[in-house]
Image (cartoon, rainbow, N blue to C red):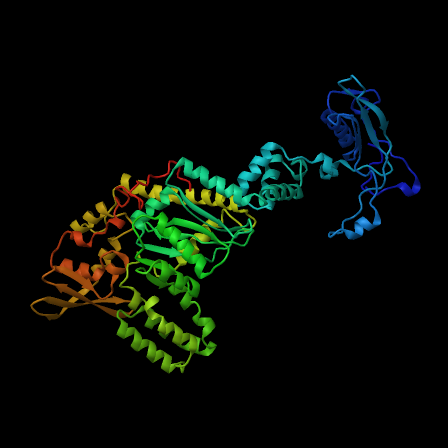
Length: 602
């Protein structure tokens, strides 16, 4: 190519004309004929690539019927010039690339002809040619193939950022200059797709939910607007989640801190825990407002969708509007506040010196007390020592102690959960698939993919428990019994720890026997109280592990071992922890069976 300089700047000042050097068979000529304008474009663009410039479409002349183009110009990308006022009004100031270059071809279609003929070929340019190592940067020589668009979408579905997508394409192609496009083209492609979805998001989501409901009538959803044709809130739960609530709906974790879509809607998942101790999704919602009315609406939809009534326990962070909504929608449910959120605020709410000196004592009062009186006493001692008896935040937390302190809340079943960190752990998992750039429809599709992966892990755990026989570390009849009944993540550790417990008779009368069960741990001796009621043949412990987790505690197991009880009594075996937890029919409020999804996806 002629004028192969490293500069593309225009050369109109010296009046020089640059004629590309390209083989004759690749060079346009007047009289050449083509079957379509696409073929004309491809031919001229190929010539431009060999010559060292880019092209673009220019003016068209239509026939009288406006159905056919009779004349078309294809020009050098440097044709024309920007007006000064245009460049000043641009929000993003860019360099001027046009310099009124006259190079072009013109094709015409004469009456009665089916072909386009080159009627004019202006070969000369008023600027230097682009060197070959930079030709892939010119717009007309960049193209994203259909297969690349598909792959881009697939990579986006697992939240691969644009710069990583480009790196993948670079490896596939063997270099940046061989990809066929630049990073900006991928960005523009995604903006174009998202722009098309933006005004139809609610419509697309509704159609998608209706299609899911058509595939399985047990798919439940509700969408509402704000009265101005704008999205306000929606709730959905598929058959798999609704069935899961029938088996594991005793405790729900609700979290609204996951704001991750381009409309700044709050994503509000309701989570549970399965028989493997894994997090499961029970339902999802988008809310535009975090008000009492919005929360009540969502909880009422949740009750309509779910079989079996209200959960025993719901765990949330501290939010006044949410607390009121729970008391309205779930009047019989124990509302537990996330202990992690509360304890993490001590370093912020307390004076720095007081926090450093007394935090460990606060921790002992919170975690190392088994009954209400013991907690109250230890709390008041440390508050008094720290000189914080009038501290407003500590006073408010003490007033709320029944909702978050283990000594108070452990009597309510929560499958062992005392915080909403399980929800925050799910955030990290789901963020691998979704981002704040997502539209509603894009978010739901990506969330569906993430959820299918989560459910695959549950399926693998089910398979392992069904296919493999757990190896019992303790060759005891009770351990073998529970290994057959329970999933492998449950029970055995309690039995092992029970061997380190020592029983001491405290009192005995005609109705009951009371034992002190001691255990040496971390250089401290912890003592729990086990009460055995003779008439009901029932044992309970001050640690409340059975009430809180649903797994018999090491202290009672120590009593069983002393009394040579070889097998676990049925009253202490909960179906929700058994391998067969998901057996049986689940029906909705109308008595209709909720059948599982054919597809593991949400």
